[in-house]
Length: 213
Ligand code: GDP
Ligand code: MG
Image 1 (cartoon, rainbow, N blue to C red):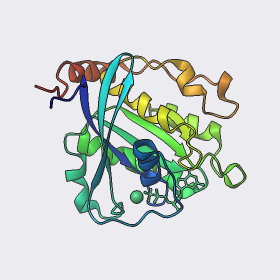
Image 2 (tube, protein in one colour):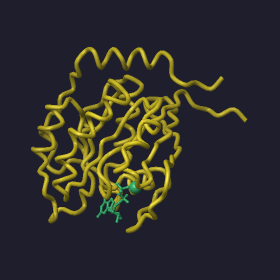
Image 3 (cartoon, protein in one colour):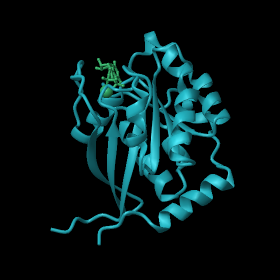
């Protein structure tokens, strides 16, 4: 039976181990949260179709399966991906400090694809060690959009994938989507003007999405 979708995008989630990549992907694709995710060997992916701006977007989201530290397995993982989430843990400073390293690897393996920076574990307000201002600053400096999520209570998880989908299609991101899940973020403006080069690549990509035949 033919599937009804307008776009099929492979996307990858990267970031330090323990940041919540698996938790966010499982929350998004299956709708639940648990304290412990079995460490799996090899790459796994989740599939989910969402409707956004009247497009049915089928997302194939690759998760590292606990092999974040093994560089040699990662090129395969990135192959053919059209968008990327760099996820860090808002309560783990080191995972935030490693964001530029992850960005470098994404660019090396996948070129200039749309990337969304995500600060996860927003529910752990008292344990937070990365401020909103710092996260917004780095996202601006490194030219990414930024949102916060909690796989535990579900906040922001849907937006993560909706925003990434819009970026991959090449559509504008409604500003309210970027502010709504950021505590006190209603007045904070993110850089909505991506440089032309990036925008152009998105447009080119949107011409030849993986379409059902
Ligand atoms: P990964 O190594 O990046 O895939 O991280 P996991 O998804 O395995 O999550 C690591 C740990 O953090 C697990 O114990 C999760 O239950 C926990 N965790 C993940 N996301 C959240 C979150 O949003 N809030 C809280 N409180 N814990 C989380
Ligand atoms: Mg994992």
